[in-house]
Image 1 (cartoon, one colour):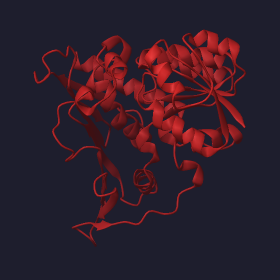
Image 2 (image 1 turned 120 degrees about the vertical axis):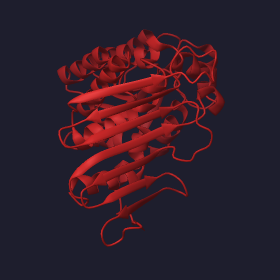
Image 3 (image 1 turned 30 degrees about the vertical axis):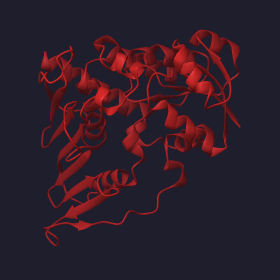
Length: 331
């Protein structure tokens, strides 16, 4: 039974992930830390373990095997290094960091201490997306020449995110940017896994003026240029409705794959035989890929198990490079 603590409760994804961790029956949730008393009270109403107002106090007081880190992107950098220096495996909520320098520090700390550092991307647990990636990597749609991903909603406040979550999402230093960091990150890691490091990243970020009090960009696009391919990753905090949101398209020389979250989630293939597209069945998936917790625990138990590429720390470090190049370009 692994002993796990949570560092940070101010990333709203924490609650569903802790529920999934408990459901495995393979880990004991022993503690949580955050500087916000309201979040600590919320934790105590839902989960067991001791709560701390200090991250250092928790790490110095508890005997642990691993930590979940659900903090601002900036704070996650420091918390990961602190945990790795104490010999603890780390699951960190996406993106890896606020800065490339921070991602490098995290990677170095994990490697130096021979620890698992897994970055949790919510879309990594969509079987349809993993199947699409596998198809592209196996050459089933020929030469992959474009990867396209769009992440969009009306905005964190409008979506109902907590006050604590919104406070750091709307802070450039704590987040790393605005919508660009929050949502272009998904397409960046997807492109990195499928196409590698681009030769050039062009970034565009704008404020639509629809959120007068927001000082950061509410929309952004990154264009990744390769020798014989390109990728686009789009982010919006102003989109009304779900049409086009969270859709993935993979374009190959012999086929096109559309991975759509609507209607329960589907994956469709268009090729010479089926120009209008057909819905594909998804092969049975390994049990450890059910969610972030099952995969992280399996990786802790089996040093030989490869972490899924979307969540593997070196791929995620490279995706941070893409984001930083996009931010630099946009300026």
